[in-house]
Amino acid sequence: MSEGSYIYLVGFGVEKRLLLAVAKSVKEVFKREVRLSHIVLPPYLAYDPHRRQHRAGVLLDFLTRVNYPRMLKLVGLFPFDLYEEGVDFIFGLSRLSGEHGLVGTFRLTSAEERLYFERVCKEVNHELGHTFGLLHCGTPGCVMNPSESPQQVDAKGRFLCEECNKILSKAQEV
Image (cartoon, rainbow, N blue to C red):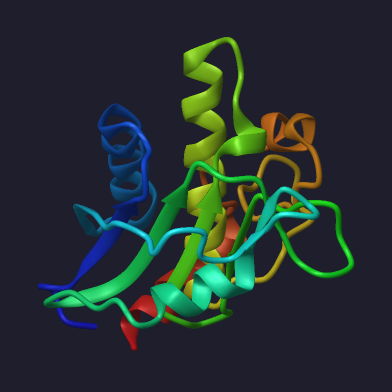
């Protein structure tokens, strides 16, 4: 990987302060420079009026058409309630070893802003981990632990465990 490649965080109607907090977290965990951007979505893209949710796969397909100069990875942050077929909701979606991922902030909200920001940081780091080839991890506290509730997000840390860090290092050498 070239030294001059960036991880892009793209906001779709999320606060700039949230993007800045996530950028700081991503830089700490992945040791890469982070760039911020905003994109306007086509109206109602991926929205399912019967479920009152957005289909994450459609949004991810939209993101795969977005490329920036020297882009290594890209994660979109959406203020939506996301789903995929067969599940009630998901926090995020990415393609294993791909370039793009996304996180929906809707179900990560909290009355406490610090907790909300922390949850979003964890899920962005989780989805980025998948884009670097990391699978779900069972090590307590690892950000690659799967999460099916905000409480499970709260129970994990922002960082990768030692084993996941080794895998990430090898992936970044390529």
